[in-house]
Length: 460
Image (tube, rainbow, N blue to C red; front, side, top):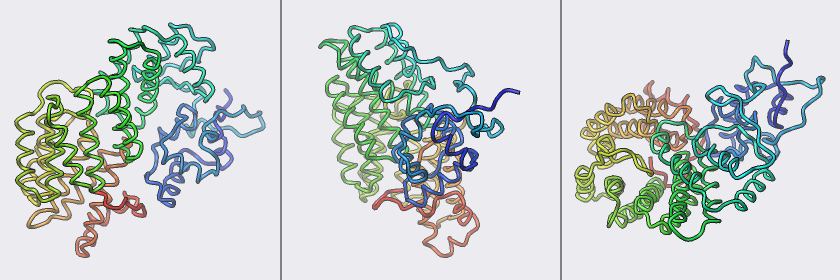
């Protein structure tokens, strides 16, 4: 009988000492997050296993807070490799499914080891591993990463192959982003962004440098959008500012417009509706055709919240007149027909026209059926929930059902922003004592981190 796999990280070793399964660990993580108001609502079984195996060494900042509160140990140490125990020490048992003997990729193939020396061709292979958005499973220590960057800069120069691979990674992200759990994208996007910055740092002025400015900015944008969707606005803002610097250097209106859309969103969900409107309006002049409907939708919902009904409806008409019918481009989701229906539901809901908003929300959901676009699905269910509340005769039970559907769409996809917004609307429902007694509303409590405090002024 083969020996049981050994703990690969200090975190895995500590779980053995506490006799915890992965399920136990996830439960304790969620309890600790709620107790310290960490701003996260738990982790998936898959995410936990990646931490235990050491295939993810840089968890999200809010997750680091929870881990360090649980174990009173620095997260870097928790996720670092540990010396293999002797046979007398306990090991993680295979039946719990915590850590397989060899970490495999999603395609079932074993992960290759990291070469000690990197030739230029091997360096390109290593760089492209993240660009193609496939999980390598290689755990790099800080020294490994420093050495990797140093060697890459030393050998960098004209490298059209790696640039092409980076660009191909962005092309794939235009379709993968909407259908992939956010947690599965963080490491690969960060590695590709770092690769682009490495090459940019050694590039000479010219066309290749402008291309690298653009691709570095695009990866920074996607890292910022991940942070925004996972409810980490400070990280999102940092990456969006960096992406804007790259956009200016590259002279790319699609990237700069994409950033304006997201900066407006940050202000909007922080409750600063006037600034959200200003950001969207200022970016409209000379905007890329792909961005025009997205800016219009951002402007429409912001104006609805400040009570400018005519302006909000005019912005919706602008969106309708400029619907994008081409393929997705690097940046936010396309402002196509589904987007128009969804943002009509959002805007009309904020204007108190819930009956009209409901119709648009159902149209959007019909167009989203079978697409797997979890953020759009969750957001549209949220718009539908608002539509059931913001109408002459509110329907709180229907609103609660739509909130459950939003949580289902977000489940295992790592967008904490959805849970924040569901929590906010749920609290609005429970303010009414008669609504709070309704079974569908009461049942929502079991799926929400009720103890979590929403940021001041947060918009749901």
